[in-house]
Amino acid sequence: VASSCLGALGVAAVPRRWRARRMGSAHGCETVDDASERAKRKRSRLEPDPAVLDHVGIDRHLEALRRLDEADRGHRDAALRAEEADRATKVTSRLVDQLTHEADRLRAALSDAQKALARSQDDCAALARAREVAELAREQLRADVAEARQDVRAAKLESESLRRQVAVLTAERDELSRGLDRASAEEAKMRVACAQLEQVKIEQWLLHDSTVMYPRR
Image 1 (cartoon, helix red, strand yellow):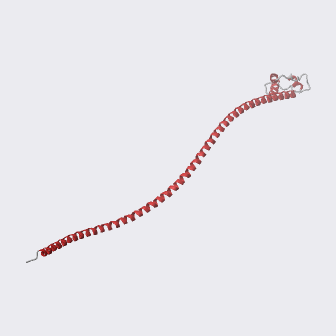
Image 2 (image 1 turned 180 degrees about the horizontal axis):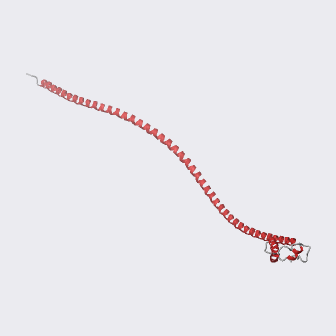
Image 3 (image 1 turned 90 degrees about the vertical axis):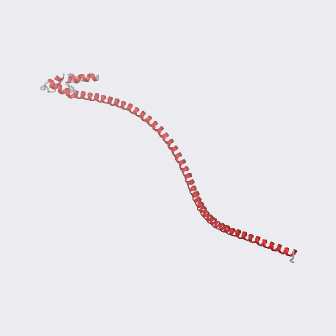
């Protein structure tokens, strides 16, 4: 059929095998018969018969076959793209599930972190208040220590003054003690002298009495 169509078109001088390969290569096969058989396997369709339709050229027929093959390829490509899209949708769905799970985990972790941060802030606030109290206590302690130092210095000064007073009083006491000793010694001497004087007076008085009672003859 192909040879008769080519003869009708004035291409009989070309070798039959070459013409078959040329027309088959235009369709992506080895020969026209292979292209026709392939087209029949792919899809059930009615192919024009060049022997019946003489006014239809073989080029149009091959163009139609090429377009049908392109349509088939387009359909296969579309099916492949649909499958890829379906796989991508499944992958995306799994990824969305994983991301949702990860987002839930991160939300829980964020909530725990916020709670921990709130506790830390409360602890920091408590530590700040305790620090303020400690600083006030430290300032009060410093004031008390300064006052105590002043009291110690005053006590030292007073102690030094008391020591000097004690030293003066001790010196006066020693002087008085020595004066008392001298006075005691003088008193003892005066007592001895008084006793001697009294003894002399008594003797004189007795002697006088004896002369009065017993006058001399």
